[in-house]
Each structure stands twice: as structure tokens, then as C-alpha cells.
Length: 118
Image (tube, rainbow, N blue to C red; front, side, top):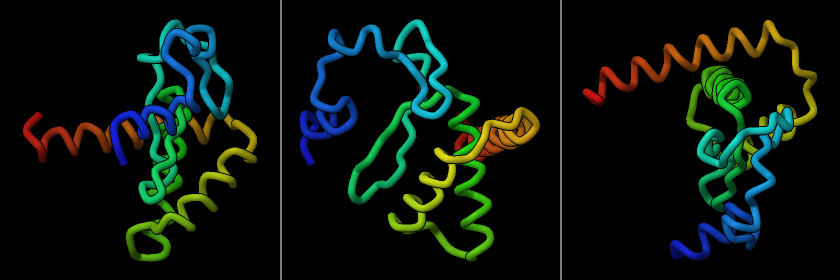
């Protein structure tokens, strides 16, 4: 996939100028000042499918993917990632779940940074 094809896939064929008023989380629709305030989340890697989420929602879906991978004991394939994604989109936002996921996510990122010496 070329860089242009990737950008077209991520932004739905729109330029950054066309997206200037659409800086919203895909899940909770939280409005941000710029697209840089949203995290790109790879729903699947093959095929390449990316959605933009606020940090809180990104933490939640990453946590759900991690829990599912632990449950089945292996890396998630595209079909499983899509199933978890669709369930995530349908779930009610319950603050305690999202707070727990954000704490997990922050700890996860901290551990990754230590391993990678970032």
C-alpha cells in the first residue's frame, strides 16, 4: 500500500483541510481542537483499517483487545479484532470501565517505553 493509499484509507479520501471541522472521536464523538489530539487506532492491520479515537476511548479498545488476546492465548487476527471493535462501538460508555482502561493503558505505555528505552 502506498502512502497516498494509506492516507486515503485513513481520512476517507478527504484532505486535512476538508477534515478541519471533524476532529471527533469515532466512539464518543468528543470534539478536539485538532486531529493531533486524536490517536490513530488500527482496528485491523491487514487489511489496513484505522479510526481516530480520543485517548480515553483508545485506551478502552486497546484494553479490550488485550483482554481478548489473553483470553484466547494468542495474537488477534483481523476477524477477531473486527469483532472486538464492533462490540466496543456498541457498548455503553461506563466511566468506571473507561477509567480502569485508561489506568491500564497508561501503565502499559510506561512499560513499553521502559523496554524500548524511550
